[in-house]
Image 1 (cartoon, one colour):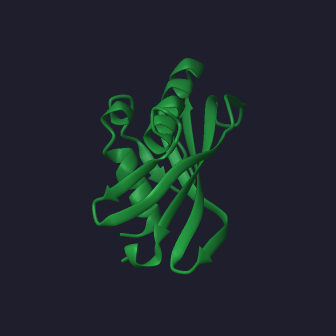
Image 2 (tube, helix red, strand yellow):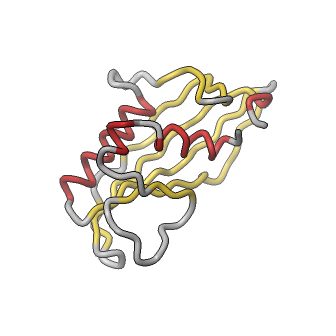
Image 3 (cartoon, one colour):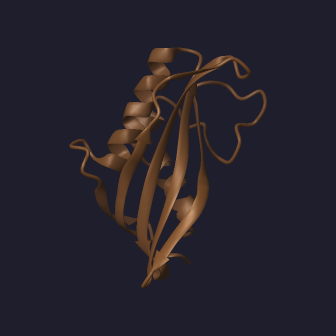
Length: 133
């Protein structure tokens, strides 16, 4: 499993998120998509040192309702930052995460071009290079 696949796997297997939406896509938001939706992609810059890799992904929850967008954002923060905000550790399918944490919660942003509200959240995944298959 690749690192971006692990992010998608975690999002799609979190019932508190999929109870709101299962419309979760890697990359750009497709045109004509129904809301609410979540998109994610890797941010520039890779840190690799002694077999440990660190990557930052931007995950954006979108909805026509600002409250719903913010609620989805909170679920993403809980998933990757833990309910106490200290990060999470463990295995995701065949991918071993040394640590997942929140880098930035960018708040609620109006997206006039998409006719919705967006909640972008940046996460960091730390894993051993041999986790990637």
